[in-house]
Image 1 (cartoon, rainbow, N blue to C red):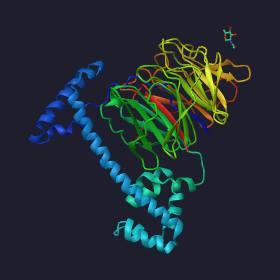
Image 2 (tube, rainbow, N blue to C red):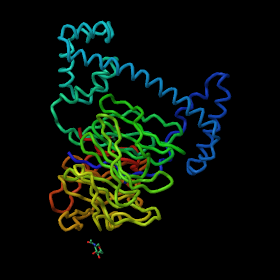
Image 3 (cartoon, rainbow, N blue to C red):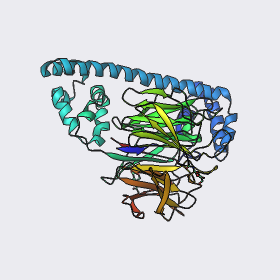
Image 4 (cartoon, helix red, strand yellow):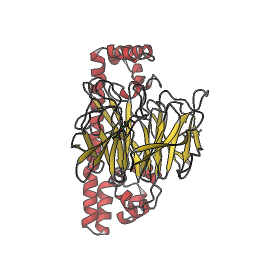
Length: 456
Ligand SMILES: *[C@@H]1O[C@H](CO)[C@@H](O)[C@H](O)[C@H]1NC(C)=O
Ligand SMILES: *[C@@H]1O[C@H](CO)[C@@H](O)[C@H](O)[C@H]1NC(C)=O
């Protein structure tokens, strides 16, 4: 299934949300008093700068460093636990492969499972075949039973053995650290735990970008002078640190195809990039690809007919690009496509809002509030019809336009709602004018910062 990642089309300024989060530490005893004073300072600064994020950059260096070190230690501790689990997982899977069921069971009993747990009485084969038949939405709960179950789930083995059903999930975020997830096929909401805040609160105060690839939702953020990646896994229903790109960036174009994703262009703070990278979610690695013809930021990406396309964007000197580029994964080469993004983004507007359904490219012309379709043969766009009527948007920011299986999805804020609601609209393109159906609403907010569609 082909889907579009988040090229930043709905990225915005993530200012707002709850202010007290980690400050429970304020109530700690005296020997934390000094640290607390610093936290108070941070808090006051945050409060002051809620509407003026630039104030944050004046925060004393030492505070962020201290906070950062603490979180690094936390992350390392988590990492150790994770490593221990992974070692056990390896042994477990080795055992599963090499020994007979009886031995495996014994192994499981003696080493890995909690002896008070009745699940331990089951042979490993049976455990796995039970899990295969369980709806994947329960995997998070299963992973919490104990380390052995977590290992089994995390290995992805169960997921791979499961009959392929093409589960679609719409992830979107209207609040700094919160994500909503909706399953349009079953028509239900799934709960996603709150995203942990990054060392310098990137995800609260600045732009973030997201990308769904395989069974992961990756969220990218920029620190003051570094970058962060967080990874949410639907297998474990939890967040953990993700892997940084070879050349970290923001405001890039991206898209995913199964367990692989490509990011292209963007900026590293000093210059606009022409480099691109491929992420493999199975190996958790980034591979640097040949450079594009043009450096571009605030561009968008899609996969179509097995090829990756980067569309539009802005140059180093703030000129709007009207070309796109096609990347051929077999020949490792880029091809420039003139006029591919004419009218799709303005200098102050959001990156092009594009989506691919059944290998056909659709876009939203946000000034005209129209849906368009691209004709690959003659390299031109034609207008299909109207975008949903009621919506809140600033030059294309704050709304999401995505492909989800065989439908196009538009997530828009409802006007005049307090504190805010979004509606999810769906249309299965058939060639005629768009017929939007509202499939769900949520009161999470009315400005969509990020959206990514997972199909796995
Ligand atoms: C909004 O989404 C959350 C899950 O993120 C869900 O629990 C809640 O029921 C949804 N609200 C509505 C009004 O559907
Ligand atoms: C791109 O569009 C411009 C203006 O419409 C046109 O003059 C030009 O010939 C087009 N270029 C190509 C390669 O189609």
